[in-house]
Length: 88
Image 1: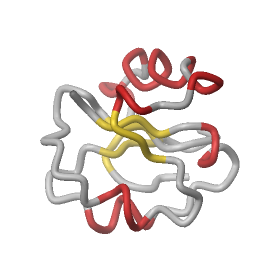
Image 2 (image 1 turned 90 degrees about the vertical axis):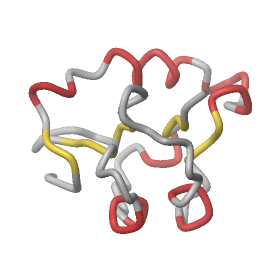
Image 3 (image 1 turned 120 degrees about the vertical axis):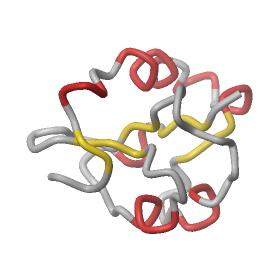
């Protein structure tokens, strides 16, 4: 299980989730339109979910059906070419 950032983050990139993440598993790079949670690094602590002002963070199995494409986006994001934190 991991957390997924959905469409509510697109073009918003608030970064409140980044500030509370204890393992720095939320990534972006300049030019990204949203933040991404690295599923290999996420410890499922849930710290990010309640601070998101856009309600864009979901437990993977609770991602709304109309946002299921964001599961793949979070898994397929090139974390090696990015850095943890809000870099946009």
